[in-house]
Length: 612
Image (spheres, rainbow, N blue to C red):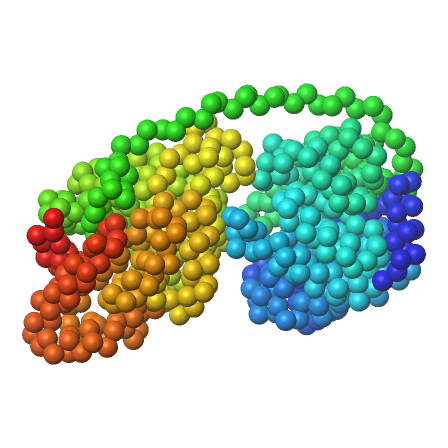
C-alpha cells in the first residue's frame, strides 16, 4: 500500500475532479461470465481478463481504478466455496490493479456489503461482520491499494463495521458510499442527512452515492449532501435501470446522458465521479472528456430542496383480534392438531378434516409450511380456507426457507389482512431433504430473525424502521426441540426467540417423560406456555423410520420395542402410547400439539378422546 499516494489522492480530490472507473461485473457479464459465477475469484483463475478491463478503464481516462473485489469477503465467497481464500483473492485483485495502474493511477480497494442480515433481524453478529471485513481489507492492503472504497451499502450499521475494520488496520483514505431508493432514502429508511452525519462521525474522508436508480436519483441525494458539510463528495450512479432484452440484462443510459450529469455532479462539488452497474469504458470516456481535471470551487448556494414533511404518525392502535386461542392461552389446556397442505390444488378433503377435528374438541389447527421441504399448496392459502370454511382457529407456520426478508414481511402483512394473526416462526427444512434438492434455499433470516421481524410489525414499524399506518397484533409462537443434538445452542436460540417476543412454544415430538420434565424445569423461569408435541406411531416400521431417518426425532428404546411387539395392532398400540404420554404430560404443560401421521386425523381424535 502507498500512504503517500493516499495523501496525494486526498489533496487532489479536494481541488479537482478525479475520474473513477465504471462497472466491473457488468463488463464481465457482457463477456460471457454468468452472474452466478464468482467474479472475484477471476482475479486468481483468469487474471488476464481482469487486467484487460483495468487497461480499458485507464485508457478511457480513469484516475482511479477499483479492484475486482466487491464481493470478496469470506461470507459472500462462501457461497462459491472460496471463503478460506478471501485474503489471497483480495491480495491478487489489488496486485492486478496495481500492475496496470502504475504510478499515475490510484488503486481503490473495493469492499461491498456482506449480503447477510445483521442481528437482531438476521443471525450475523457485529463482531463477525467486522471480522469478515478485516480479513478482506487485510488482503487489499497486502496487495498495495492506495485507498479503500466502501460501496453499495444500504445499512449504516453494516458500513459502520466496515469502516471500523478499515480504520483498525490502516490510515489510508476511506470513501464511504451508500445506495438510495427513488425516495432518496436508504432501503432501511435513513435520509441523506442522517447518512452524512454518521459517515462523517466515523471519519470517512469522502462521502458519496453509488448504484441507486441512476443519475437522477444520485443527483437528488448529492444535492442534499452538498448543503450539509464540506467533505469531498463522490458520485457513481448506475447507467439507469436494466432491461431484459433477448434474455440478457441491458442498461440503456447513453454515455452522453451520463456525461451531462457528470457536469451537474461537478457543479455540486463532487471530486470523484465514476460509474456503477451498466457503465462501460465508453461511459467513463465521456465523463472524462466532460469533467476530468476540472477545478473545484465551493458549489453555488443550493437551496435545500423542499421536502414534503411526512405526516405525523397516527397514534398506534392495536387492531382488535377475536381469538379464543389467545384468550385461553395459559388459562386452560388446549389441543392443536397439524394439517399439512395438500400436494395438489384440492383443499376440500382437508377443510372437511378440519371440521371433523373441531367437532371433536380441537381448539387450533396447525398449518405447516411445506414440512421436510416437500412441495405443497401455499400454507397461507390453506390456512385461510380452513379458517373461512371450517370456522376453526388456525396457527400458520411461517418458514424462512423460501422467502427473503422482503417476502416474509409481505407474506405476514397478507396473512394479517386475511385475519390470520397466530404465527409459528420456523426456520424451515432445507431443500436437500425434500422433493426438489436442486431448489435454492433463501434463509436470509432464521426463526430468531423472523421473530424479531414480527415483533417490529407489532410495534408499528416495518422492516426498514418506518412507521406503519397501523401496527399488527400477531400472536407469536416458536418451535423448540428438547432433544436437540446441541442443547446448548438450542437453548440459546430459544431464549433469543423469547426475548424477541414469543408468547408460546411448541415442542418437537416427544416420547419420554424424563426429557419433558428436564426441559420444563429449565423453562420455568421464562413463564411461557408450552405445547408438548406428540406424534402417534402407526407401526414398528414407522417408529424405526422416524428414529433413524428423520432429523430431530428420538424415540426411546422401550417405545420402539413395544411397537415391535405390537404386531397387527401397531396403530392401536401407537395411540395407547400417545395417550399414556399425554396423561403424564398434561399436568405439566399448557397444551398438546398432535401430529397425526399420513393424514390419519382419527388417530388424533382417539388420543384426546375423553380428555376433560
